[in-house]
Length: 143
Image (cartoon, rainbow, N blue to C red):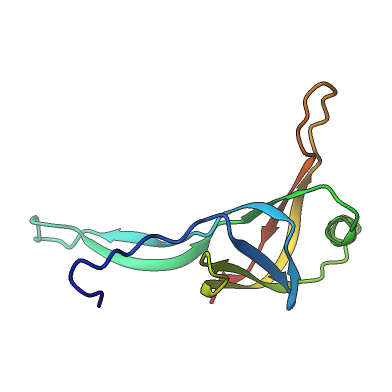
């Protein structure tokens, strides 16, 4: 519990790393899809008109979307290319959030991930933007 009057700031969302099978991939500029939900099944019980039972069902996880600057390594493209060729290599990965001092404050661990979509950079002469590739990963769950 914080002391009375102590200020607690939220963690910044820009200091994160992605670890794929324990190897840190630090060149990501964006991560989305940190999401889980539970399906709800409604059951109407005969003679009970005041409410409907809502029962928990399956857990669903959103795909992870990672954006990174196009750079020297082809490791992620090679992984996706293998999937396109029918060789599915599932990997465990973690999204790790750090506070401004560099201390790990939160970690999301995903199991059995593999790439399902790759989008190359939009290239436009005349705009001084960084080339950004997008990789979408399906996975078996958040632990």
